[in-house]
Image 1 (cartoon, rainbow, N blue to C red):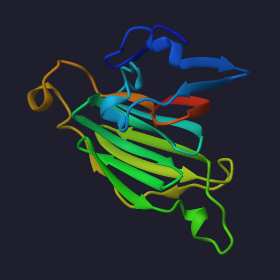
Image 2: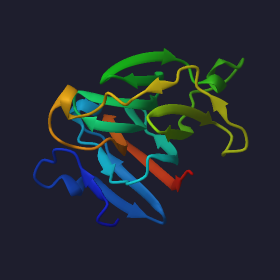
Image 3: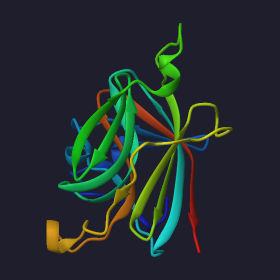
Length: 181
């Protein structure tokens, strides 16, 4: 996967949670939230960037993408069979159904594309449930300049991270990183 990827606070044999099959990263779920599931983090050096990933979650699992500092401080978006979960200041805030689930006769959404844009510490989130054809802007932007060691210790950096919590597995496809000017 490259040296830029590492689990946060990994247990022994943490890498056994991962397997790559045909361009898809399969991550076994662990814990209940990003704070206790050992997210897979990427080191980046840009002050403005965009990350996009296609996510598919098993029933009982929750997966998503975050800007992760440590178990006390992270922000981003995840989803599972219960719908969307916004993460802010290291707290989970259930947001209800994924937009497509509100449609009459709509079934549970198990796939979602999430785009995080970190533009000099302003986090903007978009979602797509139609294969990245259309994007919906999430209704909350987050200011994340306070996500650092003076607030939460640890002397780390704010990093994009993939997480899988709950039971089952979460699959991540087509991860892209783009530096912004």
